[in-house]
Structures are given as structure tokens and as C-alpha cells.
Amino acid sequence: MGYKNSLKLLGYRLGLSHQYLPMPLKKLCAMHKAFWAQHSASPSA
Image (cartoon, one colour):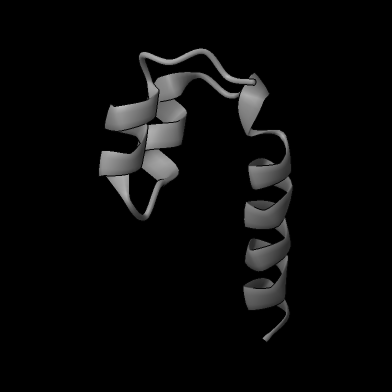
């Protein structure tokens, strides 16, 4: 049960720092990959 909570925390922390992650890693980890296809061209605000 502890590993499940650890992975949730890891995902949460990755989400908080998504602006520092490279685009291929974002697409790899994304549940909805189409989101990054739409937003990859626009600069992050």
C-alpha cells in the first residue's frame, strides 16, 4: 500500500514542476497525450 501512495506523491510533485520537464517526458507520463499536442507550440505562462 505504501508504494501506491509514493507513486501518487511522485506524480503530484512532477505535476507541480511540469514547466521544468522536457516535452518528451511530459508526453510519456501524460494520461491525455492530446493535451500536450495542443499546448506544445504555445509558450507556458
